[in-house]
Structure formats: structure tokens, C-alpha cells
Image 1 (tube, rainbow, N blue to C red):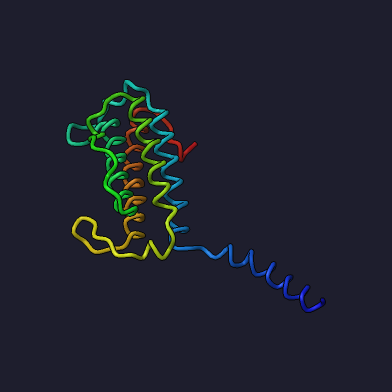
Image 2: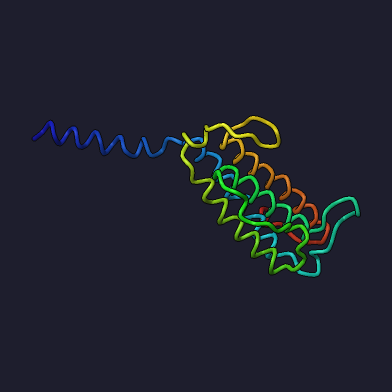
Length: 168
């Protein structure tokens, strides 16, 4: 009985340690979740009248930035999932705030499924933009792409006198 108790105790003690070991996908997921939240909150904060704002004619408007993020998420996350892109709409052409906020929410929900893949699936090869990578590489690309454009949003928000979510 004592050896059984010691064995059970050893298993119970090992379980939390094993659970704390990060996975490759598990390391990327929180970075994506943070930027996903920051972009969503930005879209909700920016007044509808500012959705057509752009600092110069050479760059996207707020609305086009939000739409571009939606387009990229669907493209990259569908590749990771091994699915056809589920939308046929160019969200950079959408101008209504409510529609873009809803599209950002839907694209985040769709991508959440991609960030739930196993590490084994994450290591499977994938070609993205004619470059060999892995499904995990595409997830990293999606997260870094979101961060890149969140940086644009921060600049736009500061120009318009707003405090971005990450600075609140």
C-alpha cells in the first residue's frame, strides 16, 4: 500500500510539472491573443467618423487597416487549418464600423481554432507566399502581421488624440 501511495504521489507531483512545459504553439498563442485583444479594442474605441482617417494618402485608412487584418487572418488561419478561405469578401472595402468590428470578432474566433492545433500538426510543412515554412510558422506570421498593423493603429490613434489599448 505504501509503494502504491508513493507512486500515486509521484504521478500527482509530475502532472503539474508536465502541464507547465510550454508547447511551441502554446508559446505563440498568448502573443496572438494579446494583439487580437488590442486590435479588437482599438476597433471598438475609434469613432466611426475616424474610420476614413489616414495620415497621408500613401497609407490605409483606419477602416482599411482593420479590414486588411481580417483578410490576412482568414487567409493565414485557413492555410494552417488546411481549409479553403471561408470568406470571399475583401474586408478592406468595408467602411462601416459595426461591420468591421463584427468581422474582426469573427476572424479572431476563426483563428482561435488555428491556434489550438497540436505541436505535431504545427510542425507540418506549409508553403506561404511561395516560401516553405510550417503551420506553426504561419501562426507566427499571423501574430507578427497583427502586431505590425497594431503598430500602425497606435500611431493613427495617437495622431487623433486617443490612447491605444496597450497604453491604458
